[in-house]
Length: 307
Image 1 (cartoon, one colour):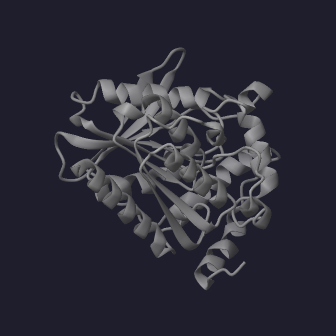
Image 2 (cartoon, rainbow, N blue to C red; image 1 turned 135 degrees about the vertical axis):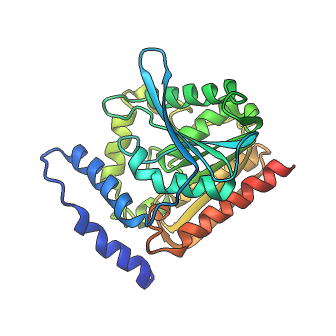
């Protein structure tokens, strides 16, 4: 594994942020993820407005955050953003910098979904929350100043899992999809998982544990809405951009998922970021590729909405 000096600098830094004092590995993981994102994401861009709203769900209130970009007042495009974190961590603070960058680069309103996390809320709780939020945005688009014909979805890592499942259900109401290093297969059996089973960033033992927390029954493990690699029918899936990182254990399953979509006749672009590791979207303070990916996503969305 040949890592660039810049990536090595990032990886050398990661162990230094493990400062949260707890006996609970889940608590440690959640706090470390938040700390890593806050320290490595860099300066946060200003946006026009940030609103926090609770959407009524079946038996709870679903928190969402709405980012409005500068210079856009009405008939805006919109992006439903579903965050990563192995289904067990992540939220507003881990992805705030990414959401701000995307809002300004795309000129789109960002609906960031703070979905329920495993193991407290295993599948399908998180997926149901994302579907509730997407349907709320679609049904209230005009009230929110959003063009209902210009709505799409972005998911990173575990958020890519959820986005893929969601677009098979609601894809005919969405114009585009972006999957950033998506988690697509709970077997962790690809060549890239073997190559990078000890990292960097992710490791196989923790990945296996996260999937077990998310999928609490054998039935769930066979459910295509839980495991995207099992999906057979992508006909409702919109035009898709799949971003993968070279030194990422999820690389092969991301590329395989993209191929499954292509085999179903879906327009898919796969973009490999050379030398990058999982989570590089959080590392903008050091990596130029973070901004490059933002710009590629913005270009992809703009072109799809112009058609």
